[in-house]
Length: 252
Length: 298
Image 1 (cartoon, rainbow over the protein chains, first blue to last red):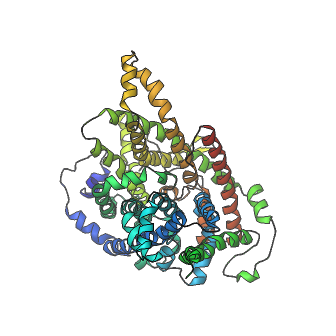
Image 2 (spheres, rainbow over the protein chains, first blue to last red):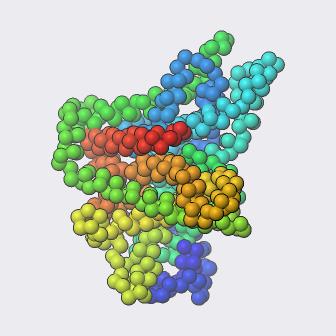
Image 3 (cartoon, rainbow over the protein chains, first blue to last red):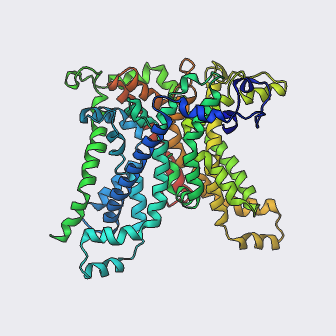
């Protein structure tokens, strides 16, 4: 991919595989940057970043609150809620694709980022994983805080959240990758190119996939689209891999 | 404020979210699947037609049957992926230096978006200048028309579907490698030492120590991946768009087309629920297998 960006169309067509191009065309990277017009690559990357970061932040906060209540409070119906969350894990997201599409239209959220961010606000996976983590936090600490006059919400905000940092980091990273790479829901929901995520924007290159003239530029665009996540992975691989090898395998 | 009320207050947003964005769509979808709803008509004008959509899907819609068949063929990439992943994990486990670098390299395809990976593989599969065909030609073989109307098993297993499966295998090997590597490292070294002292060779200690201890991991990987793989969408959408002439169609792509192309919502909803029931059945069978295998964590 990287190598292809540096090639000329003639080299792409050559009957021999060249892993390292003879005359690297570095200017292709600049051309590729300006190649995707609707939306420009920087805009799509920015959109993806905003959508992903806000989804992840919202999801971590809201789901860890639910996880905390389920882990540390005994109340009527808590088992039902937990069973519902487990059941949610088994329901394929494609099942509610059509009703959700209509619902988003009725809310007036079609073709807005609300339709991407709000449904992601709670995730059964995150709730489940956070509950499993918070259950390991000793009750004594919480009781001590309660005795010294901490409110219930303060307990969550000042005790549970800071203590859950490792779990939040691991789960947040996985969710970041998932939401960043999500394709089906954004491609259904977004119509205005200015709102496109990077994945939907790349999809716009599909019609020219066979043209050898374009391959260096398509390859360049893909390089721009993937490099941010690869860098993130390399930096955070310890957390990311640890989190991923757990339950997350089922959902991809 | 009474303390017993606090959990409920904390859960209000969650309840709202579940009611509006989970339960309502599911129920509404069931109702819709019994109607002939087609926008832009108003939903109130849709007629209740009972099970007609379901009957039509299961008896007359050959495309739906084909798409389900394709989804089940596609799932078969998973065992291959697990085997190769297992092999790499064994090799990597013996390497002392550079393990973490290899781990990162294996993991990059897993976190890279399928959309981007698909473009690379479209180039690899290109009939004229794709490296795969160049390689085949250099071996003196006939280049394959990977994206064409060709079958491996006539009328059953299209070549483009194999192309998609190969891509997925490549993409997810890394995940298996990492899971197995974690599994291998959790086996205490003493087991292997004890085996060596009592005269067991490499093969024997693999056969009688490594393999049985990793069996739960292998089963877990295989089983949990099935539901996700049956719902394949992006891979097929990006590589073939279901084509040529819909021979690589899969259920989620079909549902997508019923929204975006045909706008046939009632029928599409019926398809979604049949597909949901199939996945549910598969998952339940698998959980039974897991239980029998002595698995506790699912």
